[in-house]
Each structure stands twice: as structure tokens, then as C-alpha cells.
Amino acid sequence: MRRSGRRPGNQDTREAILAAARTIFAERGFDKTSIRAIATAAEVDPALVHHYFGTKDKLFLASMDMPLDPGELVPEALDGPREEAGERLVRLVLTVWDSPAGKAAVALLRSAMSNEWTARLLREFIITQVLRKAIAELGMEGDDAPLRAALVATQIGGLAMVRYVLKVEPIASQDPETLVRAIAPTVQRYLVGELS
Image 1 (cartoon, rainbow, N blue to C red):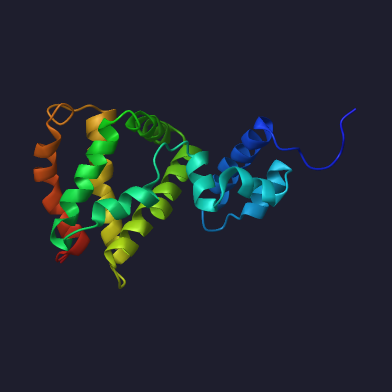
Image 2 (cartoon, rainbow, N blue to C red):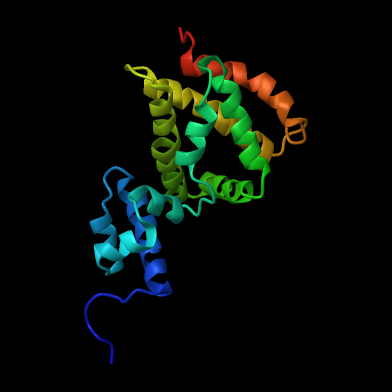
């Protein structure tokens, strides 16, 4: 006989929380999702969500199956002279995507191209975990900050698609430093240069 009430803490609980998180993040977006709503959907106490995942950001990363935390990587990439931020950002992207951790990102990108639910999760990930963090790290202010961040995403997303998913040559096998030198000036302009 099954007892009523909240699910006890175990691997099934963790998976139930992740399943609920994926669904709710995709339906409502990151900002409109609460730990309490995820806990309710998973039929667990909110304290268990915090126990397994800590913060909403960390739960979101786990629900996306992301092996790396942009909250740690983006500040590292953007730390240094502002006039070299584009170069550091492109280099970081290539380093991560060329590493074993990049395989999960490639799989996610492929899935997002054919599945609206995954596309919504990926969009939320890019906006909340990458772009907002980059805007904050660079101290970008004003009405054009979200536009600048989204323009950077066009370059980074295009690079990822062409190099890792479509594998268009010679980009797919190009030396990373050659790509950094070619793409970074455009990323730099989008970050801090003149847009008009």
C-alpha cells in the first residue's frame, strides 16, 4: 500500500524534480518559474528542491543537462581589458565547445532545431544564463544592452551551428585562434562599439 503525502528523498525524487523543472521552465520561462511551483509539480517539499539543487539557477542548469556553469565562465571570459572582451569571449566559446563538455551542447543545439520545447529551454538558457550575465559583467547599461547581447548571440550561435552541427568546411576544422581573430572584432563591436 502506497503512503500518501510527499515523495521521500531519493534518486526518483531528483528525477521527478528535474522532469517538473524542464516542463515548467519551458512553459513559463525562467523568470516566471518558482521553486515552489516546481516542487508542487514534482510532489515534493520545496526544501528538497533546494537540498538537491541549491538555487533556481543551478536547477535550471541541471534541467538543461549543462556540464558547465556560464555563471562561472562568463565573468572569467570578460575579466580583463574591455577592448579585448570580444576576443576572450570567442576564445572561451571555442574552448568549451571543442572540449568533451561541448558534446552535450551540440546535442542540445541539434535538438532545439527540431523541437519547440527544447528550443524554448535553450532560448531561456541563453537569455538568463549567458546574455544577462554578460550584460552585468560588462556593466552594459541603457536601452541597447539587450540588443548588444542578442547581436553577440547571433555570432556565437552562428559559429556553433556552422562549426559543430552543420560542420561546414573550412570552419569545422579551422584552427580556433584563426576563428578568434576573424570573429572577435565583430563580437567586440557588438559589445561596446558603435552600432549605427
